[in-house]
Image (cartoon, rainbow, N blue to C red; front, side):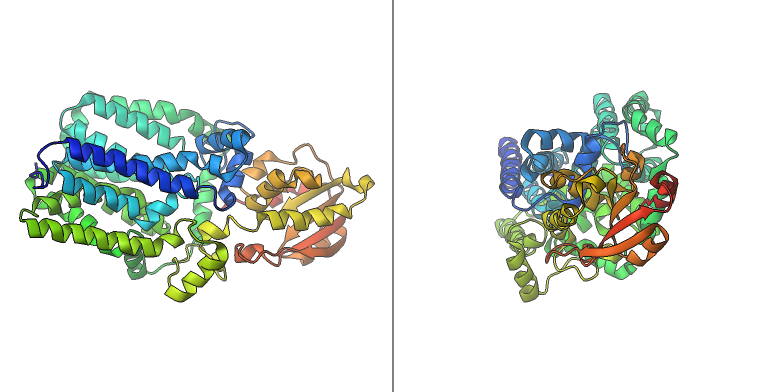
Length: 511
């Protein structure tokens, strides 16, 4: 076991540090939670959750059901994001406890806890409610429980199974980590495979996750089709740029901490138990690169290495000047994160954020091809413009005669547009939106049998084959919205040449 650092003699200061960091992190996220509007995916989650099911085309059921319930309670982004606020706070606490469990004292716990609290990508993942908001907390907790299990605690292995089952009801990415963890355990902790508690934990996870996988099986595993399509949708990032961006999104000043955290298990006998986590990271890294994954797909794995790196570094800060040097390093990391934070958290208004990005030259790496031309980072751009979009479609609806409204539906390109119309379109009397995108395709025609359509599209010319008359009657635009949502045509499509039910299978779009 690595020796505790020299700045503590008892566990109490480090324990209180975990509580304090969790509280501070939670308060910051809570204050900012309602500053912008609902994110594209949050709108979609709410609508999915309003149609309760054991699963959805592109995700397990837990986040949509929670989003819909919280939206019904409060009706604002603030309420919807409360689970993410809790996840951000809990991650700081769990990371501090992990550092303590590895033998670290106050200095190690401080470095580990602050690292995860200020890492830009971890801030961004919990700035909104997403299926990724819980990844860092879940993986860190599973890692901590497995480490306790390696130390002989069977109950920890059972709780690891419970955690895994719950996160599989949030996001399927645990299957990716599971491959890495399995390889790591086979390489370095094979004795764990002989433990009945491990397999009981796996069984518990499978039972908890079973309903969602049953739903996928009954519907032809649409998630697999979606995952295959995502590779083409994501931007191609060169290997070197991908590596460099990993350092940037975790804070470059903090990079030595997690790098040391990956190396230390192979040179420090006290941290030897973590070798299987390093192997898990390596395998997951390869799988993410082969799958064309985004940079944040690996974010969940770093907190554990922040903890191990902090323990190793702090144990070597035996002289007072060394401890103060490490404290200065922490301060520098916080300062840099404060500079980057406006790109992760809604600290600035859109106007000021645009000016800030121009002045500093800071900009996130584009993660999808469709992001080109967008002014603000996606985490903000996808929260903006939805009310304007709904009003622009609503203005078109006003000119549809009452007689035509009963036989007219609204068809959108994607789930963000459809969900915005569903949630914000009531004041315009809009019907429930239709879309072939992801789970909206499974919602079908929603009881409608239209003869006419209002279509929001990038390709109005193609509607000539669908309608007797297709006239562009408006366009979409909002200054800070995603670029691909601007300048879309709003088309009044009269006289469908075929029933929409006949056309519906061709409209399906999974990505």
